[in-house]
Length: 330
Image 1 (cartoon, rainbow, N blue to C red):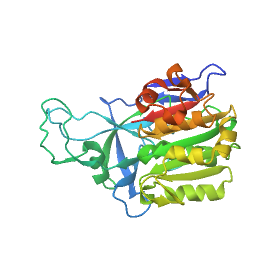
Image 2 (cartoon, rainbow, N blue to C red):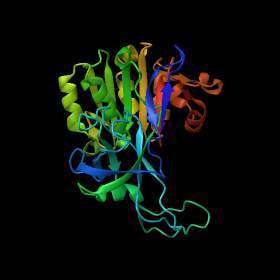
Image 3 (cartoon, helix red, strand yellow):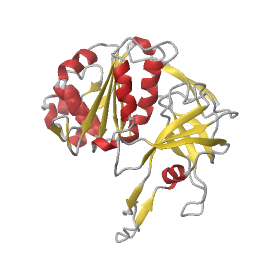
Image 4 (tube, one colour):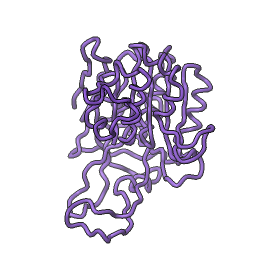
């Protein structure tokens, strides 16, 4: 087991909260018990996403997780090569004090993977379009309350809140199950034992359809009870709030004055989690609206090109986020 101090030099970025990692490694997992599994989509959706909570009481993992970290799950059975399945990591969606108030019950946001097979490597049959079910996500979604599950972790040390969260303001940007760490972070910031942070907290949630919004009612409730919390939705495949095809960066672009005031404060931080396609649009948006300083480094070959005309491949490869722009995409 180890404790990582994520501090950085003043001026380079936030001093991140120290975290524990590798308390339980894949070769020595702990046995946890499922205590909750419920749907968290916003009504009838084509996706199957569940809030999945496990009880770590009596294990070394109880009380060790921070929002932004992940735990590992070992699915039973063997893979196609006859070997035990590798550990799969899932972001915690719980605040520091857990779902139970003591840090013993933690949760994640897990989506069933249901797809057709596609060629992945040389030798794969291009005509094989049979149904493929994700090994671990479907295993977890099938589990019932009371079932046991093998768990490892904590994992991750660079996508966590600052050591002094009250000293900062925040812009969280998520798509899909990338919302998981932000549920925990928002709860830490607004409803922690020391009371809500004084700074502004903005959460932008992107989804294809409004029914795909996750924890929607909970975020609406938090926004109603906390005047400094602002919950924005970006829906890409339907008319929503008067607009068609709105992505996460469009929320910032459409409200540039509001976000400029937020991001020009050198205490402000951006966190992004979800699909990797989010990065390009947000990098362009920051540069186009004069908000790039302190958050991204633009290479010389793009410096004289209007940001909305930046080549996507070059942007992905060459534009780099700073230590005030924490990114975890997949």
